Length: 320
Figure (cartoon, helix red, strand yellow):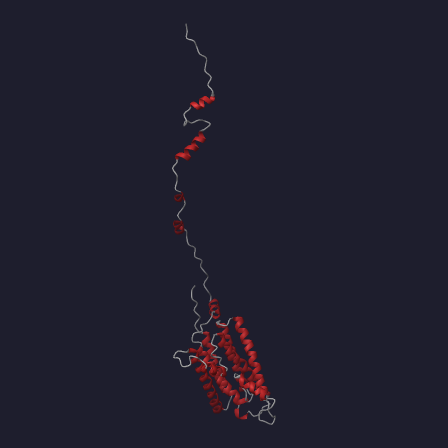
């Protein structure tokens, strides 16, 4: 007898899957198993090692330096003139302005009986004008004083607004201000020199010569630029055109006899500068008998001051 033949056993697919080893590859679970192996078997990577070093990156990165075009002569000149000047030792220049005030005021008073800088005296002359009899040698002296006061006020208004508008410490502002004052003095001296106004001091006897208003108005206008300039550089102790308040400040100073007192020293020097200027104006006028000679000297000194401002050191700015 032959052995009984068993029919083929039908295997359940689920049983076949269970019979497979857990790590055996299959067509349906290959990706899942691979993913499981990657997430469980692979060692953790250092995240910092995958990022490039900032220091290395910064060293390797080329540094771009922007090259500015070379400055022209016009650019350098513009920067030089618009820079602010230093106020150190600026009192030296304004002491010379005090000398100019004394020189010009003594000359104009000797010629026309009025002032162009010291407006306190002009105010008194103006007040006495109504009571002055017309049979005196100068019955219209009050009118000249009035013109001087008005032009001085107009000069203060003009120079102060221009200084604030263009920058009070800018080189171009200060140079332009003193250059304008210089030119005005030269114009006043020219008016006398060419004979529009009588320049001989011994021949100025007619008080109704209204041409004398021209030099009075011009010189009063320019003198206002001095006091505006002294305030601009913070030298209020050197007004250059007034003595009363300056004398008050000298003798009411609590450090009057102190060894180191810069403001007191400036005021004392300003007083003597005005006094010496007035003395020089008197002697020059009497010696030359021409009022334009002191004016030319005053204009020359003021032109030298203008050149000094043009080459004055620049204000140093501290780096923040």
